[in-house]
Image (cartoon, rainbow, N blue to C red; front, side, top):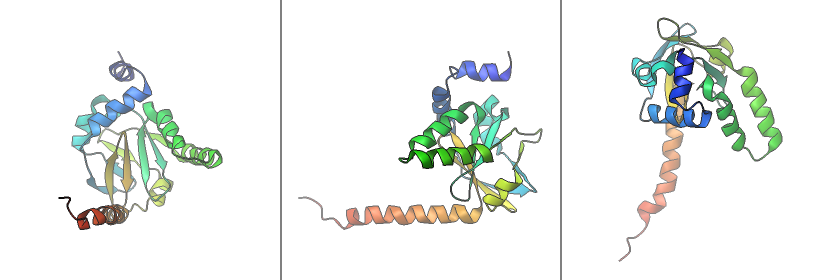
Length: 174
């Protein structure tokens, strides 16, 4: 039985089931600080171990709306696109976004040294130079520059403080 058949059999062959199984496998992983080797990035051994056979299948590299690369397993690519589409209220913007994601995507597999070749245009989009941060996000991965990762963490922390500040100042009920 080929590897793809085993993965499809293990996941029930359905993208939604496969996405949920992948999210379960990836839960609690990362972020990973990685060094770029030209246009290559090495997948962390812990990630490869957790993914099993899926790590060696095709993965779609695509741009995102901000300077980052999203890396989605080929088997859940259509499910991913449907999920992105549901996030938009304007159908025309959704169609255009999906078109950009499709056009900027490239299918990649890990080489024998557990490295992915990052497409140059995507590397430029994400401002990746000598290092990168690999982040797990549900059933896909994201590759960001360390600077953009730091900004994202700072922005998330700032928003969290805004939300929780009124709660911290509230008087306890008696």
